[in-house]
Image 1 (cartoon, rainbow, N blue to C red):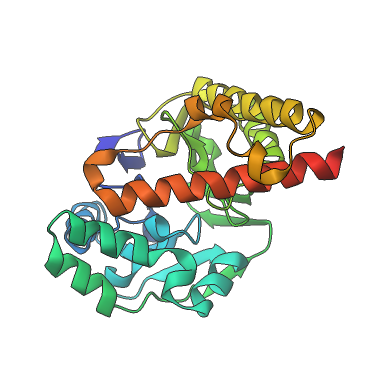
Image 2 (image 1 turned 60 degrees about the horizontal axis):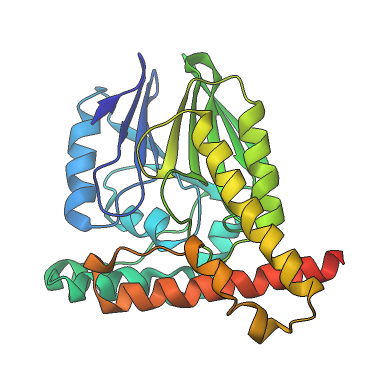
Length: 286
C-alpha cells in the first residue's frame, strides 16, 4: 500500500484495477476494490486499521467487473456509492457487467476456488447513485465525484482537492493499450482534456502505476491517433467490416497473454468492438 498524502492511500499491485483508500473523521472511504476475494479481504484488513471506525464507504467508478466484482466481499455496514449506470448494469445480471470474464480467466490460471467464490457471490447494488456529479463532504476531505464517460458510459473519477489527488478510474489508464469494450473515443478524449485542466499533482489511474497528468496527455494522444486513422479509413470509402481490419490499428492493441487464452480472445474481441463503435462515431460526424 502506497501513501499518497496525509489521508490518501493506493494499491497498484493487485490483479486488474487499482484501488484507493481515504481516511476521514467518519471512517475509511474505499475507491473501488480488488477483484479476487483473497485480495479484497487483504485490502480491507489493511485499510480498516487506518481508522477505529473501519471502512464506511465504497465508491465504485465503473460497472465493469474489475470495479464491481470485489464489492461482493466487502464486510460490515458499508455504504456503496456509484453512478446510476452501475446500478442499472448490475441489475441486468452477472454477465452484463463482465463478471464472467474474470471467472473464466481465474479458472485458466488455476484459481478455481476463487473463481467459484466469485460465481456464487451476489454483487451488491449501490445504495446511493448519481447521474453526473456528486460531492461528499467527509472532513477533513471533499470527494468531488464526476462521471466523465469515455472508457464506458459509467466511467467516473474522484477528485480530492485538499490533497491534489485524482482517483481517475479508467478515465486514465497508464499502460500500453486501454480497454475498448464500451468506449466512446470522442467522449474519452474530452474527459482526458478535463483531467489535464485540473490543479493536481498525483493521479491514481484505473490501471498502471501512479502518475501525473502526463499519462492523461499520452492516452489522449493515443486515442486521437486512433481517431485520425479511422477518419482516414472512412474517407477512403471502406465499410465498417473492412475498416476495423485496417493494419494501421494493430499498433494500438496490447494484451497480457500470460492471463490465458480466454483473456487474450476477450481483449481481441473487445478491441474490435471498440473500433466498430469508433467507425460509427466518425461516420456520424462526417
